[in-house]
Image 1 (cartoon, one colour):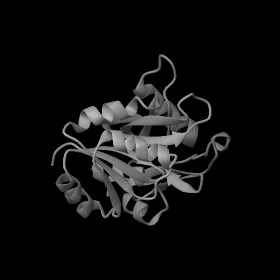
Image 2 (cartoon, rainbow, N blue to C red):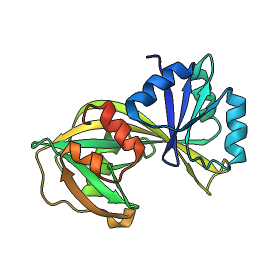
Image 3 (tube, rainbow, N blue to C red):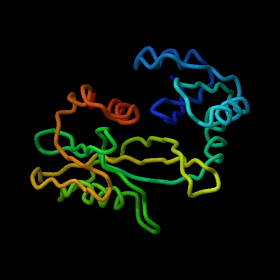
Image 4 (cartoon, rainbow, N blue to C red):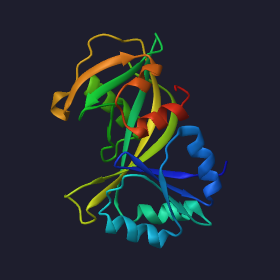
Length: 211
């Protein structure tokens, strides 16, 4: 399959691809119908502004150069970088947090002059109190758009760079309530299928081989 660029918005997805055939093979695998096809980047922007960036189905933007479309799309927003961890313990369980009525993974914004690796470890420690973290490898990035009243764009596009981490410390979990996190726990990866979580998290775990 050719490269498909994917951005999450309102728990739906915007895809940038050069053919619907490529997308059809993807949705048959992940069961994410219905969807709307938009035949140009220009029409995509018009549509999103018309609906005030509130979508209730996946969108597919088709063009000859998906990467160029995706790069142009990023310029429409304030762009921020975050990093986070898919943390696995010695029992092969994953670390998850409960925030805003969803089960999620620990992550956060990268500070000025901070490396993305250091930020990922710091955020996991701050949000869960799990210590002795070691980065095993880098995983994919996920992208999502959210409304922000603090910038001139009105919306922010966040790239989250993910890392697979390991730890042998499984006790003393403590949610960072100042960040709206009310629970932290270890789960078997397959349990994630039965928990209320974001599509971006399911996508990440599938691409990383956990689901």
